[in-house]
Length: 371
Image 1: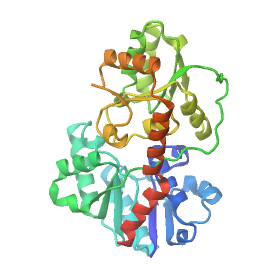
Image 2: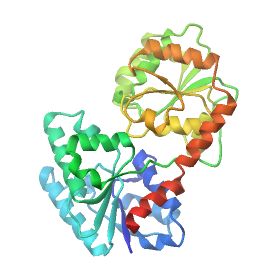
Image 3: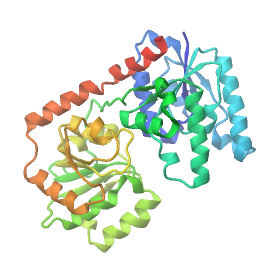
Image 4: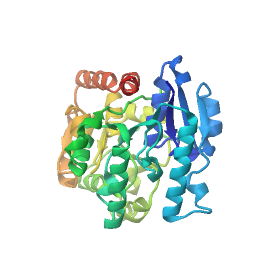
């Protein structure tokens, strides 16, 4: 039984994106002997990366990525062309199953000879955009699910979201399999960061829906704030146009440390040494970072948006509603002055390690192929 793993959403610049990490954790968890059954469908830009780090896998290069095709195909004609080539390559691979781990590319909704198992992370695309874009993505997700043998939802929240939008008649196709969590085995202090620094940690994309603004507002409300706010995330237009002006207007510059990029080893160190981790997100299909922080035994405060109470098992500290800076500032002060005991944090850490073990989650996915 051969299984084709779609990695056409991964470019060399997005190796550390959440959907990329999702796939690589699965590949790393597959039994060495069984890896012969898996074939990777990859973009040209990551071919050398695959040869270096995953050489035990066979692979096929997909030369019709959007960036390459845009040179001579645009709009609907591009998507149709990509879909035809995608379907052709899948057929020629002679794989029985096609595993699509990213719900981002429109050409993947085309029916294929291989049985499709698709992963849906969230439905942001049909909730937040213009009417025409919402319709386009509604049709995409509908076709993606209908053409699939099984659909994996990364949380019960996401499963219910799918059923709400597309109807109960597809519920038999949907299996809930949580994301896996694995931190680097090594720990390295980031350059120019003092090892005795006291800081509150925020790790997330700096987009509006991740709600960094409420955290900044909460910090301004805390009197005698003696910590640094460590923000890890690549700059975005929202960060530069909204967050930075707020930081300057409220004289927060000397309280903020912004790290554009950290290695896995440095991120582990930051989780482990933080006085507190805060996640104030408005939308989460799963929510990696609060769970990762808790595994490192860091006290965690997070919002109660969407899937977070479910995936964090209601074991952390919470505040609500997500936009309430006053409530968040009160909660930060409370947890900093009286943090959870080391014993309770250790129990939570062990619980999360077991529940989100990559080997466990990978086995659940492989079981779908065996069905």
